Image (cartoon, rainbow, N blue to C red; front, side):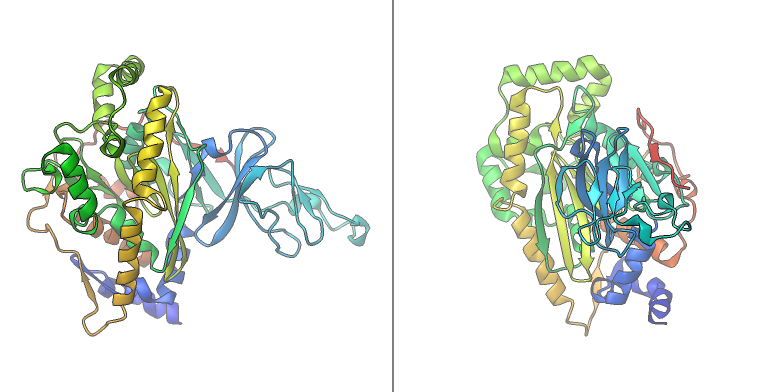
Length: 455
């Protein structure tokens, strides 16, 4: 009864320019989010480069569901629920590794890499009605890949991944095509941090162009001293924009900023690569994609994108958001190498990632401190509303039909909450119908492909 009452309030809790702080603090709302967003639609799970060979696995989650991402004996990526079909114990406890099979430590039920039940100890305890083929590990009902990005859905029915991604596909393309081989590599591993706050605080913050000169003031000032000039990003003259791509996917768009280049995300902290290495990199991109497409790729800075609900692609990294409870969140951050580039380029990407996003970096600790202060502040409920009205008076429709405004405006937050409200009230409708307005930019060289079929 309580969840039904909460659902009926979503229209009142989320308005066009503000949200009620209860959406960050109510455990019943959190449970409903897991059911309606994370356990129903497409969720980013991992990248194919994390499991390069047969038997390689990583532990993941879809919402609150424990999942094994593994490459099976036939070379296919499988997403298997990490729960023995006998008494429910997890069958894999190591976060990453290589296995020939998964064996439950409780009663010894053993599963092949594709989830098939291979062995049951003392099988004479079961009669002829026990059919081993019916008791494999449960597969995530829908699994699909787009350019190495693996998504899963716990619902057996729904829109295709390509439709879910929509305009976000263009930005994923730009991120991947910084590699002359059109492949990124997450082999360096993952950094993780947690904070005592709601998961949506990280989602909003990752697409917030308003906070950097305040929260990261010391960093901005240090960069300006190094450059010997003021950053134009936070002035009225900047061409940087917030952009609503539709369906909750949003971005901070720096592509029109003078001097913006694909390596800026890292060279800010470490200096540019030598001219010879940078020349080799640019030449390789131009040979692979042609001069016109190469110019778009090099200008993109690797993108600054949210793929709703849980993936942020930010310059040189993937950031994956894992809700744990209404006031506890874990974030996994993966530095992404580029295949086919000079080693110096990837070295700079790694050092730049560490400088800002690492556990001792200049940026992430600032943000997580703000998340926890906000979660504490939400306890003050005499005036419970959170403002999201910045830039309402100057947002506009761009030539491609997307909504844009100044980089410090809250178009991105409003778009995130609009999609959240659609999903929570069941009023989302067809994704293609919602994106019907306006022409699109160039989209995707490779379509999404389904990896597994589940009856």
